[in-house]
Amino acid sequence: MKVYSKEKTLARMIENFFSCPYCFQEISFLIDPSVPLQHYIEDCEVCCNPISVRIEVKNGEIENFFAENLGQ
Ligand SMILES: [Zn+2]
Image (cartoon, rainbow, N blue to C red):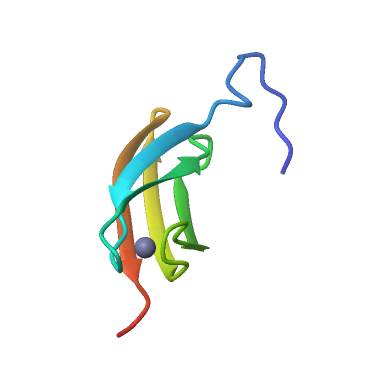
């Protein structure tokens, strides 16, 4: 769905820092705050393991952020 926005919020991304559930290094992902519920898998930039990421966005802010490993 394509939504025209009068606000200048289209390209705004939030950089969220967290600890990798595998290697415990601090890494960051860029999050699009225009999507209220997000769930995707992205590889850790340090150890390359797949991290399951769940994000809840409210009023353009990250309300909840979960990063979990995919093993069990
Ligand atoms: Zn890692």
